[in-house]
Image (cartoon, rainbow, N blue to C red; front, side, top):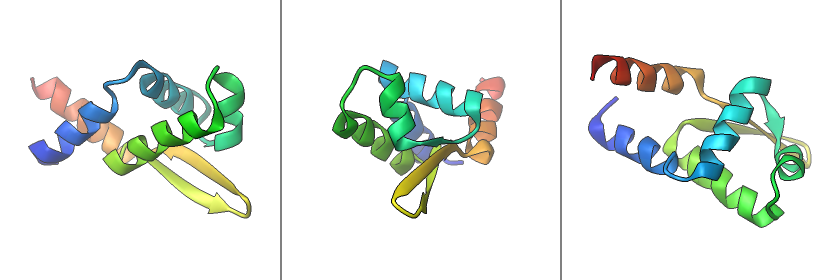
Length: 88
């Protein structure tokens, strides 16, 4: 993973709500966007924006299943971040 990719991920994780979303996704392993909205005190559009940024950074991936989108943390990317931090 190059420095531009790392910077994009760290920038995406630069908001407390996005960190909480990633922690939640790690804890439950996958989640439907609507379920995340029920957990956090934010509107659907706000959660969607946070998920969009997390997905664009590569740390979160999403699969469309009918009318719903399931999100999960990309464990490969998470491990690359962990390896980078361990090397610091």
